[in-house]
Image (cartoon, rainbow, N blue to C red; front, side, top):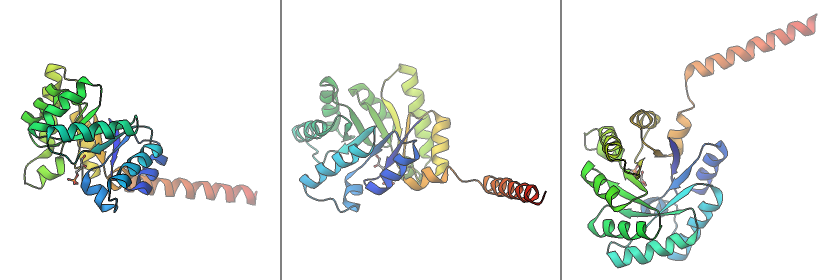
Length: 223
Ligand code: E4P
């Protein structure tokens, strides 16, 4: 499973990249706004800055919601850098645009996906990635992970090439469950990636190894 980081924060992206396990980045207009990136020029520059930190795919979301607008914005984003993947919302105009981008060899990430039916449409349109939002489904007292399992099965049944990019991940447990379900990618906050490191028995075990090593070194010095 590939790991993407779900942020527009450059220092978090650098930290994840330095860990050596990062495969890409996803952003959205809310994440860009959170970093105070405003104005088209700054937004475009920020995407290039992200591409210069990581080696993998970087999702950049269109703001337009009409077909012509999505195409124009998507082509501009794709021309920015070879790592850019155009993120398109799951709406009628978006599906038409994904089909167009797919015919032009422009890679896409179909976002705001909350049902298997939407997943089928996006795959048929030729989306490169599909982003089902686990956490936001959980927030509605439904099981977001069930949707990931359902989509993975449907894509397997028909050999769809669209990659399942599990999004709206809130915890390290979500990441593990996505891997069990066979998601192609998990896009996560840095905290969820770092939480994968944690286990109390690792800390206890390491403390004991180091203490034993120190004791034997001290004994050797006395001899
Ligand atoms: C996915 O690409 C979205 O950017 C993101 O995962 C949404 O997460 P949220 O529900 O935590 O806002």
